[in-house]
Length: 173
Image 1: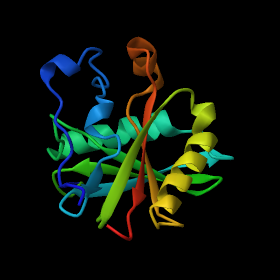
Image 2: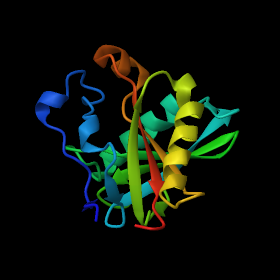
Image 3: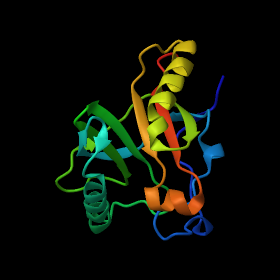
Image 4: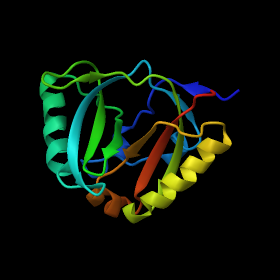
């Protein structure tokens, strides 16, 4: 049986090279099974145009500032799960220590298989297709899928990698 991880991997001070996004360690996520049930999330949304975000920078900056101002930030790890709800809207779930004023609290229950991809965002369709096949092969034909964009575009350029993690709900875990 696969070990189920109940916490998000910790980042060290050495991982904070840019002062923005920490260095991402794909080996801590790839093909691992996570249980998010004990984690706390708040929800926000962005607008999209045919699945391409149009106001993500502004929304993420404000949300992160509100988390910090509330004292609910987590400083040695982070997780923001994104889920397209239509071609024009994406929901985002920020992991926090607890509630943040004016944001809905969210629970994400269950076990989620993680698979790490690296490359241009234009490859997202290929990644989702590949991941959907992986999930189907494991007996999960229509999983709930979340995306973790591990770094902003500027940090991805600095690090030379654009890692994206897809999490799929394991109904048979």
